[in-house]
Image (cartoon, rainbow, N blue to C red; front, side, top):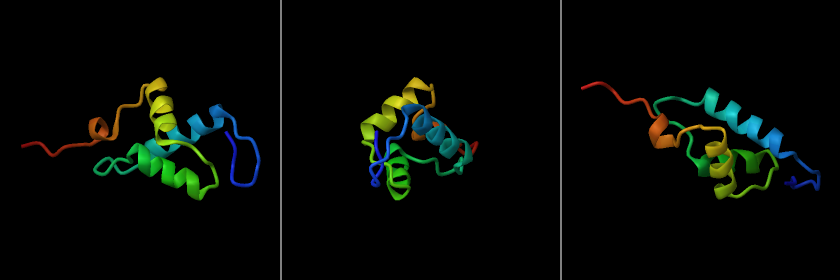
Length: 73
């Protein structure tokens, strides 16, 4: 993977960043894969949504809908 500045970024570094973003998210409004792509894009990392999903699944991080904390009825 590379940045907008032509630097190479390791997949390990991207995975760590995704893990950190998920750990710091609002549990009532978890980040979608597209939201993670948008954040990484702002940081200069070009990555596809499907790649984010693949990394997330490989790290056994549930999807945003599965991470959402629901109010008890």
